[in-house]
Each structure stands twice: as C-alpha cells, then as structure tokens.
Image (cartoon, rainbow, N blue to C red; front, side, top):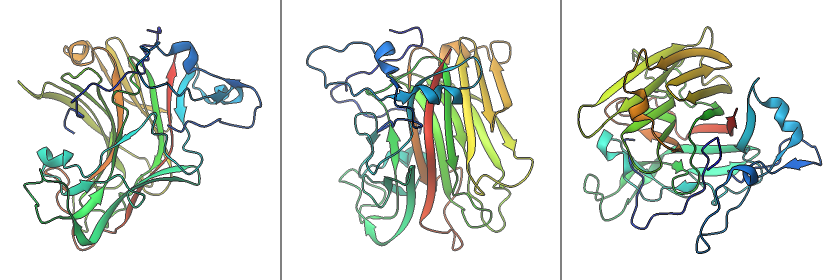
Length: 319
C-alpha cells in the first residue's frame, strides 16, 4: 500500500456493486511523462489481470492545487472508455431501491467518450427497453434509460483530493426527474457513502433550482441511518450553464467540499462523531445519472431528453 492508500484490486467472484445508490490520457503536450501509478499501485497476484497504468505529463502537475500532487486522472481523450478502470452497468435496475425509473445501459446511446468528454445520457425511449429477467417493476420494459460507471474492484483510494469538472443537465424548468451524481463507496463493502455532488432537476413549478448542489455523507443503511448534508448555491448562474469544478478533500477525521475552488462545507470529528467509523479503508468512484426516484420525482412533459451529463475529467491528488 502506498501512503496514499491506492490499490488496483481484482474482481471478487459473485460480487455486485453495493450501496444506495479512465483511458487516462497524457495531459498537455510535454514529451516527458510521469507514470504516477507505478509508484503507488500494489502488486497483484500472477493470476490477476494485468494492470494498465495511466500516465500524466509532468506539465500537468502544474494543475494540482497547492500542496497536492496528481496521483491519477482520466481526461477522457480518444473515442473509447478505459474498461481497465471503469465498469459500466448493463441492463441494470440498480436504482430500484430509490424507486428510480431508468434501465442502466452499457451502449453508445447512454455512455460515450468523444471530443475530450465523457457523456452520460439519459433518454426517453420510443420503444420500452427490457432490463433483464429480474426487473419485476417493469417486466414489459422501461421507458427511460441512463448509465452508471464505477471503479469497483479496479481502482480504490483512501484519503486524497477527488476532483471532477463537469457540466450538468439540470436546466431550470426542463429537467424534472434527473439526478446526476458523483460519489464514493467502500471498496470492501461497508456502511459509509461520500456524495461529492448530487443535483436534482427542476420542473416549471418545482421548489428546486438549477443553481444548487447537494454535498452529503451517509452512515449505516442497515441499522440507524445517519447523514449530514448541505446545499450549496451558486452566487450567479446555474450548474447547467457551463462546466464547474467539484472536489472533496478526505483526510483522517475530516472531509471538505469545494465548488470552483471555494470551500463550501466541512465535516470533522467535532461535527460528526461517526466520521472515522463510516469512512474506513479504501473507497471506489461512481458516476451516474438517475431518472426518477423518491427524491427527484418523475420526469414531466417539459423534461428535455436526451439529457447529457458531461464530464471533462476525473482527477485524484495526494499530498
């Protein structure tokens, strides 16, 4: 294990993504590259799949916030998703616990990489899509499709700065029922959840607004569920107007959220006695957009489809 706590692990037989809910490219034009993961990846047994080690240019280190060093990044260059890093749910009803409506699909219509962006697209289908034999809620098929990506059993981290630059689909008045998110769950299974960002789409008369993002930690879904959360509001504009930067800095006894480089929320042992119980060991990454559910409600006639959640990059830094 590196001091940063990074590991590239093997898939456990029979395991499925738990909880409630890249090709990493060379950044910049420097001819010298720094293979960061070679310094921090844990060696795997011989029978494990070969680890693909992304590289980042030395020039890109200048983009790291003061006091941090780039440890891993996916800049979503090229035209294919790095399957050595990302899993994509396929014909999955993963969100049924939240009464979500979409069938999560692994196909170009719902997840693609092009023009330097990862796009997760929520769609309203002309013909319902069947979502597997276990889909007891909608056995005749689902009207909505979307996508979920995660790094479980491939990449996991303990502590660091987790950053994403993304443009949201939650346009004011025309996005009711959409629920884009970037979050983390325990790699070994567990009771903590770290929501770096969650946004709720808006209808014409909804109380939600497109200039707000939720930042949350959860603890224990089996026993007494606890969470602490806040909603951050942009000073002007909304999160669908353009790309914004979202980050979390996770350290022992402390989690801090940032939006566009500004500290927006802090939880520590003094505010949250259970923080070090919920956030133990390594966590993996999740990117998804839900459609419908108990929180956002169902889409309405004004919801614009396809709705695109666009990600410029995902980066992880270490001290």
